[in-house]
Image: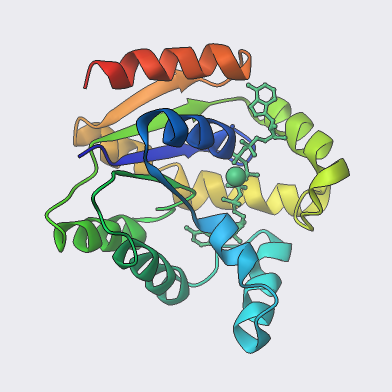
Length: 188
Ligand code: AP5
Ligand code: MG
């Protein structure tokens, strides 16, 4: 079964490409950011999530790992999964591997969307005009990128060492990027 991680900085295009991939390859799209946003209204848990998201910090591992484990266990696992925004640090990498292993599954490939920070910021600020996302502003973005650089980007090396990493140029149009990804996935 095909289980993909779509990786990249804030605004690199993870959500956009994940949707297209999920549709074509009939995968379940699990976006950690989206799953958390859906819980923002829910009492104490929701308040906690909002606090972290609005500051551009990672929610605690205990919370996100439990949330994603439960999202994985809710699937019938007759279809592959595409993870968008998860994992973001080594503890999450290990937790994801464990959760998949319980279903005799593993990550097949990590697609690393590469986009420079200036372009990513431009795209996010444009989206911010209509997204309603409270973290789509310059101040929060600074912290989101810092968190990405320090905590998340090191995972690139980890997956490269596992021979699972493929770099994808995130600069061209959405369709051009998707064609590139499609070419790679077709060969798997
Ligand atoms: P999350 O929701 O994951 O946000 P993010 O990683 O900052 O990434 P974005 O969703 O902003 O960007 P994207 O890469 O999906 O790009 P998109 O396709 O939308 O996380 C938000 C927060 O939740 C975190 O800060 C944290 O607090 C919490 N969280 C989430 N996961 C967590 C975890 N694992 N652990 C702890 N906390 C966690 O594209 C961006 C824009 O560009 C769009 O408008 C799109 O239309 C446009 N666009 C896309 N591709 C192109 C293109 N090729 N050309 C032109 N425009 C394009
Ligand atoms: Mg996203």
